[in-house]
Amino acid sequence: MKLSEIVEKLDLSVKTGANSLDVEISRGYVSDLLSDVIAHAEEGDVWITLQIHQNIVAVATMKSLGGIILIGDRQPGDDTVEKAEEEGIPILLSKLPAFELVGRLYELGITGN
Image (cartoon, rainbow, N blue to C red; front, side, top):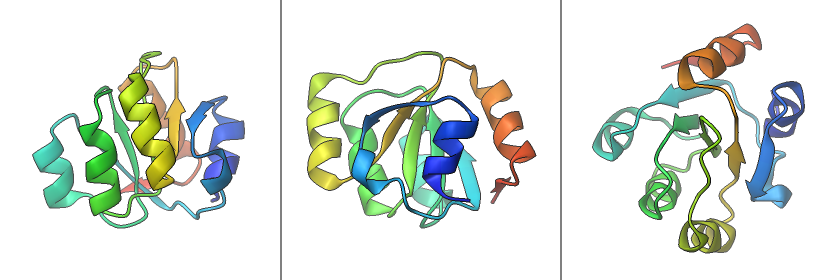
């Protein structure tokens, strides 16, 4: 499923990377520990987290992730937004808590790894 379809179906707000939503997503990874994401997320995964600092962009870039979804209506800092735009990393915003968002992603056919 394309990231743009996930945005539409889950009513996500696009904070960055509006031109990078054509990527195909089949798996997701949820974690708030950067080291865990580095160790276990796979290329193309969509990452669900509550972290909002600039390092999430570095991890997403290093792992070639398909995008980042911030949960609980969290807003990234200006430096995070700027870095994500530079790197072409989509940051999407959800009002939902992680548990509910992951359940909805699973219903759309996005599995974990």
